[in-house]
Amino acid sequence: MKTLEQANVEIVTGFIEDAANQSILDQTDQFFAPQIAAAFTDRRYSVDEILVQGEKVIARIFMTAVHSGEFAGNAPTGKAVCATQFREFRVIDGTIAEHRGWFDTATLLPQIQAS
Image 1 (spheres, rainbow, N blue to C red):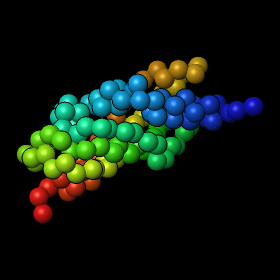
Image 2: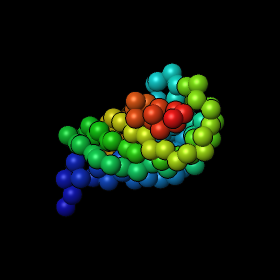
Image 3: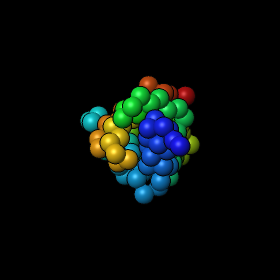
Image 4: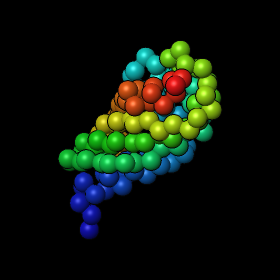
């Protein structure tokens, strides 16, 4: 029998890895989130690490994408990039009740800046 934590990890992992949820993962409270969605195409999300305590699940997610539009003053490069996103989920009775996310642009920007 699965523990609550094991079940919650499976629910969150399934949510992140389901391509149908990509548009949800593109949204964060950060003001530049719409620009990330517009500037980076062929986005794929994968779970790198998950921490869980009861109904709270924290996931570090890798987004791989292609830099195909302007972002933060940087012209499209066509380069493949990998950016880290952090997500906090609250899972109640087997359902994701709320979540929020943050992109780590400090690792993204050096990948697209001109050399």
